[in-house]
Image 1 (tube, each protein chain N blue to C red):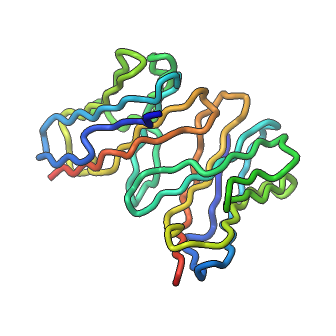
Image 2: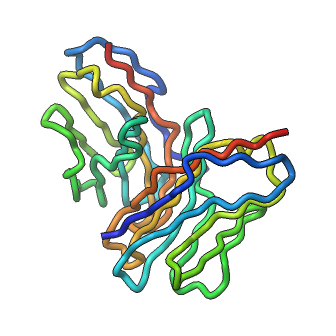
Length: 113
Length: 115
């Protein structure tokens, strides 16, 4: 079975540009999570969805960040405009239920210059 | 609210030896789940092992076992017969098994296996 798929794997952009990260969860998983990982702050939960509906976005740092899940097999995390402090690895994960084991994608390494 | 503490920022172990990575947790829930993840230098997060709070036996998955001591609120990961490929960051995580909360992660322990 295919795991969680993320694209792109690496993204280098300039400050002020729009960045869109994409995720395809494991088929049949009802929960989807977006995380950000930095050396300073560790692994932070940004937002999670249940059955395509955003449940908790309290971890989204600013209005510059937005996430959507138009269907069960696709989600996006958008940063507009991007800033250098957004540089991090962004993970998408999915699970069959909220408290269950989460399976992570390979991550997107974002560098904002 | 749940909290995970991993007090060992870094650990070294000789190849073929066993190593224990510490994890303590805090929760007011009676039912909860404990997890360990591995993050190698390539960056992916790999689910290793799960322990439910009501499980009477310690969880095992191949060379990984979870030393669960409920009264002490500890969930240490034991890796037997360490291999060079075990060098990675290891994260302990937990959630309320009632399903009301997503995973809460610790800050991680970096394990280095020495030949």
